[in-house]
Amino acid sequence: MPLEQAALEVLGRHGKRERTDAVFIQSFEPASLKVLRPLTRLRLVLLLDQGADVSPARLADVATYADGIGANSRLIVPANADGTLREPTSLVADAHRAGLLVHVWTLRSEPVFLSPSYGGDPRKEYQQFAGLGVDGIFGDFPDVAHAALRAAPTR
Image 1 (cartoon, one colour):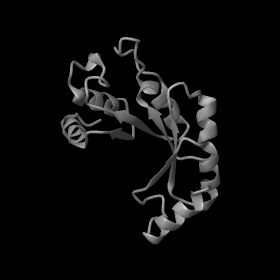
Image 2 (image 1 turned 45 degrees about the vertical axis):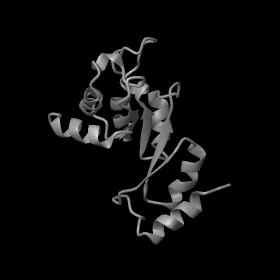
Image 3 (image 1 turned 90 degrees about the horizontal axis):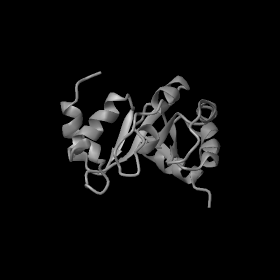
């Protein structure tokens, strides 16, 4: 069932129509964003899960219909099978070169989700992604995000 027009109508009734409004429409479906692109100035974000093609060519294509990507955190900072972290990828820089915003998802504080590389301190994860230059962070614990990002040195 197509929801694009209905979503825009609801947002419009609340005065949300412009790129500068505090709205990001997100979807895992490129087709939905392609329908929306000619209908709205609101910012559109393609959500990308692990295993997604994030090559520079794909990012250039995404930039034709979206304003940003919402990347699974492991697309930016991969992890080994034991959960320890590897070196960050070039995804943030590649997406920025393509003119895309980068949001990372979803940072969680529970030990089952938090890499042992952070030494049990979930604030370190937020600070790492902020330091890598992401434009937005989705997290399940806004109090942790707030504390971590307030303490993070400015770039």
